[in-house]
Image 1: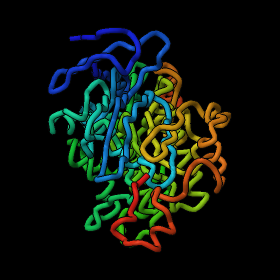
Image 2: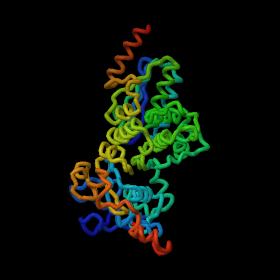
Image 3: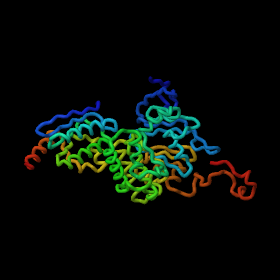
Image 4: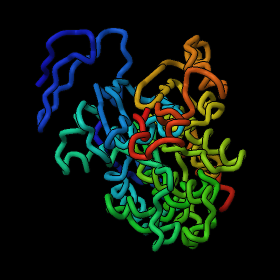
Length: 303
Length: 120
């Protein structure tokens, strides 16, 4: 069943959720999006983490979501993967609106997703081998010998072959991240979400992981969504870049478009300049007021 | 293209013709086929991947298991007709130099004949 009310603009097309998937055709000239985010709003108390965000994450491309700490990058990722429900808005993944999908439908869609969490999220009571093998044992009926071969292949890809028998507590933070990546790719997902894949890694590991993300994309056509604040690595691996600033998208485009942007906020973020339109402080309340007046009155509005 | 496997035997060499997508759901069939062949009295297994449109890690891992069986039993295990998709999956897992790979089935059979002659 295909319903649409007009051809453009894309974000105004009609969709129906709760079980009925409506796949609206792409206007001529558009690349096919694997994921489409429409008017997404997510707040935590007074903090607006996603402020009416709309974006398209294209199939078989690497999209890097950049932004400072607390800009809403990880929040956006959690909404896009269906780990959290937004206050309003839609997230279309592979033709289905995840924000109103049933648990079963979401579970099926998640088989197509791999996720590298910021804190690796390994099971601390399982060996490295069993951590990586876990999705295969959970979702498939593959023979043990084949699982062993797959785990060995994935550990080789992240440079950690030989650690199979170790427990997560015996690894460094960087090594745990690489194990998390091996687990994220063990099911050969169509799309992989990486939350800060290179933070805390040494320069060589950073280079290896960056190359692996790019290789998975170019050689196997895996769609990649990378949340990062590492500008240099992002420019190396990205096809498209989205920059978030306190819940708003302030720029999106190709690497060249971002590098050539004249938007002062983008320039400040890309160059890492301490002075500029992007404020370092998280509140609009006066610093002096905060020091000199009653605490209850000076919390200010969170930016 | 729907997943399918056909096997034929000629001069003690088994030819396994695979078509379609080899993934987590179809690779157990490939494994069963290879396991059955290695129980037979053959000298070589040639796996024709010409019509394989996609192969995931479970497919590659199954081929690795076939290679393991062939080493144990001192038999030849040859891959033929790899398209870009399968070749990329092999190269990403650094296995492109581990397997004996021929451009097509004809070349693979010629190589097996030469090896058999040398060994006899």
